[in-house]
Image (cartoon, rainbow, N blue to C red):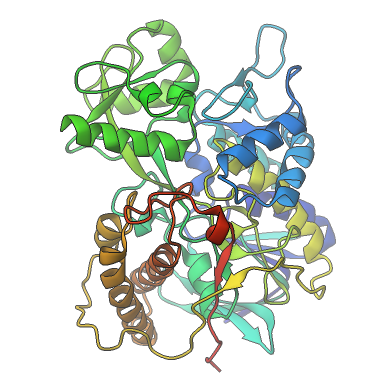
Length: 519
């Protein structure tokens, strides 16, 4: 079966929906979702969306905070776009009916999170992502030019002579189809499921990065994985995010002796950037031999439960009282700062192929994303990609980046593997929060061989799980290779054997590409 559209949007999160809103007035838009239309990483975003709309805030302050959190690798032009255009898109959401929490004057109630110098985070209790997604879906309803296909897994980009012509997809019943379009947007989200410990939903398997790399697109900065510090860690219970907003409102990190410890590692304490907090927690746990906890026992119990009803329910299901108990927490993979390389309009290195949201690498986050900038990125760059998609033949203006790892030949073919290798377990063990050359050096050829093997078997096993396993192996190999290459510690990338940041040799963005060898 073959479908046709003017614009193809792959993914139903904030970036894809915001792009679709601007595209529906310019032609037929086909929006593919991997699961149901309401299932995306956006819906799991608890904390909020950052924007400089407060009386004591400004885009310049937001810019400075973003650059500081990014550990020297943010593209300042990309950040300028984010912080200057962001307030307009947030006010647009409010005009469309987004029910953000408000203060006694009816103005948005702004929260504060780690590494923000002022309160600038709009929130809808602790389910902000879900409220934004609801608002965007509601604004799209009734457009005759929008067609939504649920439970459709995009598997392979159709590329000819350097141009993306569409995508092949796999339906839940095993049937295969192709979609041809004038412009294709990857808005497929992140890849947290590459790691055994993650806050991401099951759909976050790095499909967009894997597809783009196989098609010959450039990907970059994949070593910078953000590990969220405060994830509930209770035996037998799901690993669930405890929002940064909790610490923003005064929650404390305590060691096994009940002592606050963060100021020993950073003067900003619990409100240091996420990479700093996560690393400090691991070091403190290693120092004491026991895990750390998050406590709100010193705060007003009724207010805590009202402000964080979702997290209250999560804790209750795990047998804990959010307002009185010390909540055992530890870091888990949360967000990909890298992805498919794009310019500031979402164009990739393949003509007519665009990317926006977590799947994209605009270099706006640098080596570590500032809290609550992800939803803002989806709004701003989703809209910018939509504008560029109306002139899809315009070439990409990617900035220079060091390119490494281009290959069309088999890699690691002599490595002994078994098809059932557990990629997330391997990645968590050898490419997790703290890395070193020894484990990474063994991991890279192992994952390269496993990815190549799984990709060769895809034609014989047309099932969503086969693609899931192939994508996990491919993206895992790309992350591990990038982590082995970068010989320093910066932001979300920590090397035991290179513990210092090295601006002289490594203040650069590193990219990876694959020579296209498929017909």
